[in-house]
Image 1: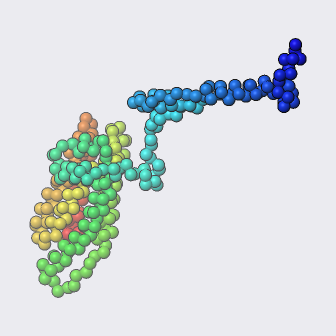
Image 2: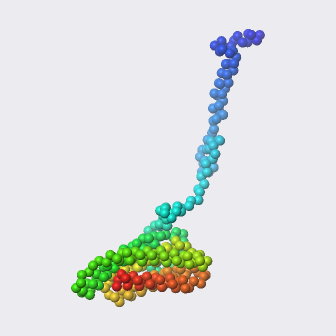
Image 3: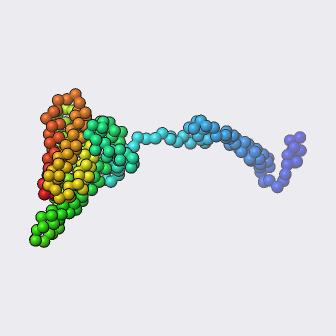
Length: 272
């Protein structure tokens, strides 16, 4: 009976019943494996990360989409470290320029607290350097013509170097000195905010330089004193509000007269 059961098997297989079993297993595997690997992917919902997690293939770790905190500082010699301090639009710059012309127009530090910039320190200082060098020579030329002198007039190139050393040095060193002084005294201080405030305080000297070319000496001195008082009041009042609660009256008075001194220096050296 066992022999008759084996006679019905195909004779093309060399090992009798073993190939038949393998064929059946292969056929079964061919039909079963695709069914096992099939997955039904649900439609994308508005669940955000939950929807992405449903589409992950089993066995593959889920990707994390959390935003890592970024550090914009790339070193002292990297341009990208300072680009964040020039991220201001035209409206913000104009608002800060107008505020610098109005000493009692409110707390300047509260306006720049969210985004202090170095625009004033760099571009306003640079503009003032070129304005002083050019208009200073123009003022001496007009005074020379007004005096009806017979001597020839020559362009003074040293005005450019003097203006650069004076303006850049003042705009950089004075805020830095106040920063280290307040740090030493235990008061809060921000060097970027000091540079921003002192930089914008120089904008009024650009306007006054155009008025100082008028060849009338008494008028020049009136313009110089008014400009110096306005700029000095802007610096002193904002510095006072910044270090409110601490008795630094001497430092505030010193800042006031430093601005006056800068105005007088500009008049004496470039518009004499």
